Length: 75
Image 1 (cartoon, rainbow, N blue to C red):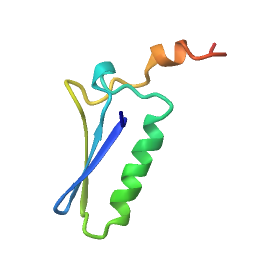
Image 2: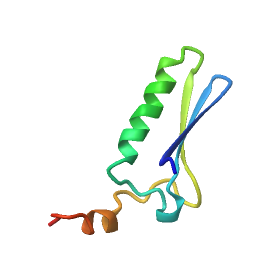
Image 3: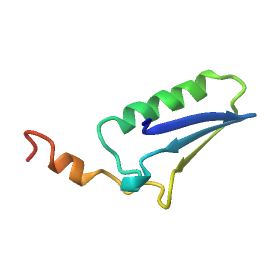
Image 4: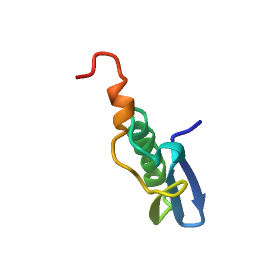
């Protein structure tokens, strides 16, 4: 499942953080996908504004501490 969704709605680029099960917390892949979505919107000359939102009941809970705590070699 994609961690970031991008769709174009006329002159609006809609970027949605898509990890609602963990309140859209940030893991290693989310920033990469977010940057790619913003780059795609910026490259489209018809997009005049980018709206960033989060799926589910939260925008973003910050870093996914459980993900990083369970990572191998983490301190």
